[in-house]
Image (cartoon, rainbow, N blue to C red; front, side, top):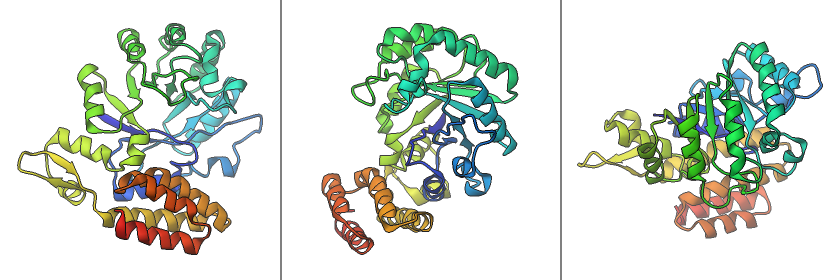
Length: 331
């Protein structure tokens, strides 16, 4: 089973990916947060900085993602990405943000299947690279998914990654498993499941129900960075130096989550140092670290208290003091 790391805009950029791969690892592919090509002849340096090979560790098998509803813009961006050495590009047809959906991008791309088909006709005719799509099941209602899947089935996608929620659901409620059942029955392309996998048990429910080759982890992997390794180690039932460093092996050949406080601290300190070098001000740095702690706090004994302490830190000195307190008392 292949495990993928979902893209989260503003979170899983190259600094996070590199640190994650160094201290945890596990995903077979890391999907980059989307870029949005426009009328400009080429993507600008700021837009492609996250994708530059020199900014990404050799441990990260990166798949760039494009958000576009204009085939010309998508093709232009994909060709520039190919020039950097990438063999696959992913289309974002799932972002539910209110700033992109009204423009017909992200999940808003799904509202007109006629235009979707025209888009893919041009894209597949003019691009010689692997194309995958990350999709929701509709904009307002799951009944839209049948026509959406009919479009996908007309084209040779590398993979169709299905997050079985509509745009209006955002990330609320449970994934619509009936919708994924439908995709599983009719899809002519390889499927990947994405949505609400926070534990090994969540993962096992999916792989026991569906004979698919890949699963995408998102918020679950941010909350527990060792989740991919836990899943793989339980499946493979083997011990090697990597697993020994990150997991506890018991006599029943089961791996248990036991990432040490020292590894979490080293991961945090790597993020902090690299963001400090990248950020233009202490305010930007603190905002970025608060964003990181929205997920890191789940590794603590009291996530609510941990997140509250971080939010109260008003400057770098106070932040560093609070971090020491958290690792001394809450980890």
